[in-house]
Image (cartoon, rainbow, N blue to C red):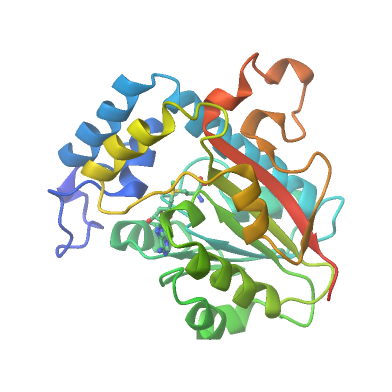
Length: 273
Ligand SMILES: C[S@@+](CC[C@H](N)C(=O)[O-])C[C@H]1O[C@@H](n2cnc3c(N)ncnc32)[C@H](O)[C@@H]1O
């Protein structure tokens, strides 16, 4: 990363790897520092497929948002743990499918927020706020959220690649419940969560490699545990599945061993209590 590029906040600690920038490296981005690259490469050395998994995750995000803005008729998106801007960001995909869609991005990371602000300077229907997923009430009450999103109409909440950074089940479930309770029926949840079910012998080592280098602790959950966190939502077809299996654009996009992508994803609807 070129620090002199101007938008890197001066106060950030570049000596400790960070989940947003490690993911950026896996995606081929250049918004990362040496510590991030070292951590990202350690994970790649453990599993060279991780970069393909990261790309597949972005592709899933695109398919899910296209579905929501298209068939599901959603016009409002709350993307928490939005990450560094890449190709096909939520507001771009939503806008292409349904012009006028409104998007609030949320991330706790300084670099993500600074860079997202630059990207959104000319996007009146989108904003980024700096907040922690652990404070969902703050996210919901934030003036930008309130300005852009009308919670008396359906909203899609995106928790893609972020809930596994909340290791405690009760805390994670409480976060999802708080967000759910702000929604009206017809709203949706998009979930993407690290899952060790497909490679249970390897998952603890993978988590240890990541957790020893990155400033956030990640937790691989089982599919059942992830489903329990989404209580009150009904998974749409095909349910909670490995990334490439969620409504692939073509059957050929699903590899022979999709569980090697480490992440389970799904789109679920809130139908009210
Ligand atoms: C792996 S990236 C996922 C980005 C994007 N959602 C995607 O799937 O392509 C995870 C993001 O979550 C953010 N994050 C991690 N823990 C968070 C927390 N407690 N609150 C808000 N954001 C968090 C990181 O800063 C990072 O940008």
